[in-house]
Amino acid sequence: MKRIHLLVLLTALALPLCAASARASGSGSIVVGEVFAAGGNSGAVYANDYVELFNRGAGDVAIDGWTLQYASAASTSWQQTALSGTIPAGGRYLVQLASGGANGAVLPAADATGTSNLAATGGKVAVVSGATALSCGASAGSCSSAAGLEDLVGYGSAADFEGSDAAPAGSATNALARAGAGCTDTDDNAADFATAAADPQNSSATASPCSAAPPPNGSSGSAGVDVDVQPLLSIALDHPTLSFPAAVPGATPDPLPEHLTVTSNDSSGYSVTVHRTAFAPHDLPLGIGVGAGSLAAVPIAPAPDLVIAGTGAPSAAGGDTIATSVGFVSPLPVVPAGHYTATLTFTVIGK
Image 1 (cartoon, rainbow, N blue to C red):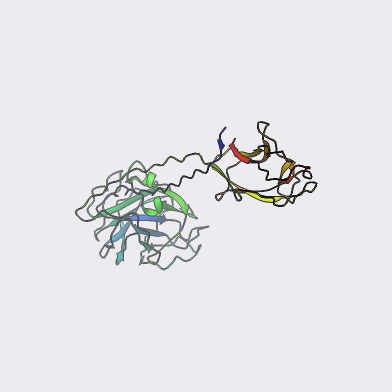
Image 2: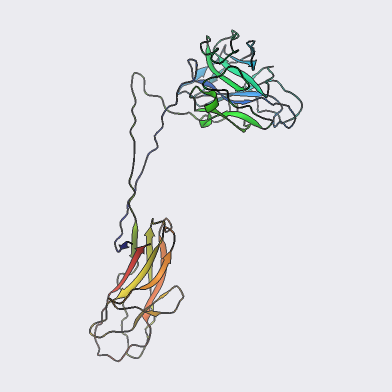
């Protein structure tokens, strides 16, 4: 149990550190950020399938002449949708595809439109920096060295995929979403994607870059940052001296306010006690009250302290204020005229 009479304050500032994740299959930074394959189906939230691309790199990427390609789960026959324009760092690009029915809301304005009808149970989506159709995809890893392949996502029952396994299949309400708001790419579809509420975004969405690239011909380093936060237990008084001028024997002076501020980061809480010395040259009946409570006699050390407050939790950020009043529990006795002094000591104790 710790008793504190002095204010000790530690302030620490830790800066978050970011590290770039692994690059996806292919040579660029344009990846599939989200796939929705139930467009228009019964219960679907959107009327069309869509694929949302994301630029997880540090610079703008022109995609003129590129294609988004789709093949069913085990097929090696790929359908193409032409892409064009530029995707800025952290930018998104929405490709609207076919519909399986008349259910669901209209997508936001698409940046490109195609006719591929994605299978809800499984398929393969690829970003290719060219217009030549892929001819792979019948087995795991068969597309890994395909020319122009920027990213590949196999989902559900797909026969080909990046990494250990395919991403999960979506649903009428859920899309496949890349982790880290699109920034995570470990070359493993199963690890990088999870189902989440469909949230199509187009090129008008605010860019959210993943991280800054190192300067040209430069290098970068990282440093760990740690801080040891010390116990904090303090008490402060708003009046270092309480004076009762012109007091008259036989009368009871009005109490004076004394506010205590306790600051503690102890999760177990704290208690506040008080004791005093005897007045000199003769003792007087000093008392204390908390809030609107009546005054209680303050014990003289070494008698046990009087507990006046306590809590089982840390203090508020700015400290806990305890309002007390200090006065006399009975009329002043008939004593010789003079200046009488005593010391009132408040102590905060960690539980």
